[in-house]
Length: 139
Length: 144
Image (cartoon, rainbow over all chains, first blue to last red):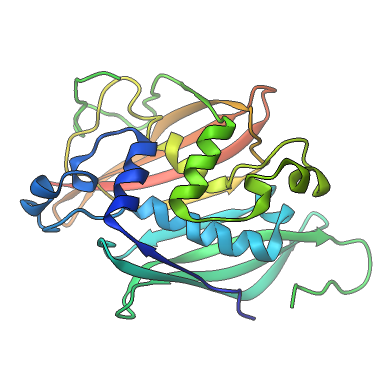
């Protein structure tokens, strides 16, 4: 079962704004001239920023079970460059039961406009307490 | 924040960094959701948050990125050129506007692989009530 995807264009301004929020001052995300001297050749987005898109997608499907009980495990595969459009998608792959609670497990990934994977991983969220009967995952 | 740098070699597994105190105010949540484009009303509309059972607006859980990366920069800066390859999170409790977090980071692992020096840094964030809200694990490498 697919989660509703999230699509965002990552501008140079967004990359700089995110670095501003972080307050670390890494020139790789801020300084075009510095970034041009690195193997990346231009500023790149923080891998961490992609997790905001994953969280938005999973929260839309699972809400409270994401804020209390969510888990993420993601690998950053490729850099995200200014102007890239990132599509974040997810698929529920299964569920697990533990101590009376049901958790939905999803594969998640972010791809750029060329179809290249920039992030991949898994997310899980609590669905419900298991009291009796069969629990349906959101449709 | 200190201008000195720590080095990969001098850090030992188990090394703890000075804790970070990080307030999550409404303005920060607004700036964060504006930057990432998340329009979920739980993040900006108090009445939506209250209707969903929260006493205040809810921060997107991944706002944790802002403090976990700072939590190991409390004593010294990491060497330049680090590339993050992996991030794990566990979200235990929602973070609400007005919460103040205490974030404790430590070196969970370090290793060298294919000429790259890897650091794995874990952290736990607690809110002002002492409740654990987020566990984080960040893996980054530096080229040798």
